[in-house]
Image (tube, rainbow, N blue to C red; front, top):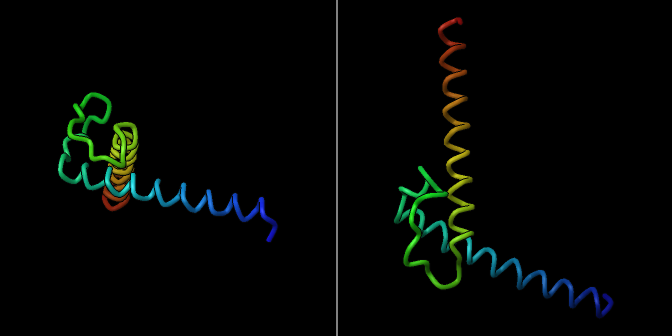
Length: 85
């Protein structure tokens, strides 16, 4: 493997490791503060653990909120299909 490519691979591995840690810390914070999933933009974010950021916490909370909305839409479709409407 050429030197530049191996340096790029090593840097990418470091970046992924940091991002995974940041995401893990953010998800843990969200589990302790589930109210942010209801309103990710306006909920106050305090006591952010070192190794993650407010933007990471909000991004994951927005993702959770979208997934919740998708599940609700699917439930409604399944309900409508089962009632024959």
